[in-house]
Image (cartoon, rainbow, N blue to C red):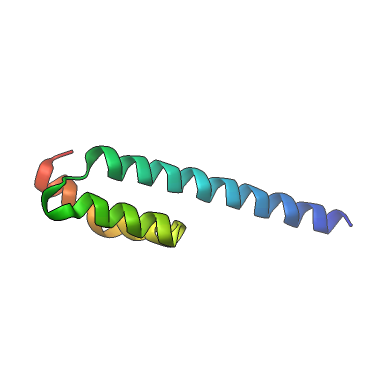
Length: 72
């Protein structure tokens, strides 16, 4: 019974951490992404529909590109 409690707490912690990071990436995309060619809209749709996978892809692929292009 004790082992189940730790596993449950771990999953809750991972779930909350992934939700907070998803919200953070979504806000970053909405506030800082350029709207040239509907880039913002496309990335927001990807992030919303694929949840943490889309946020992870945005963070690894698009965010570094945007920072090089726009400097923010």
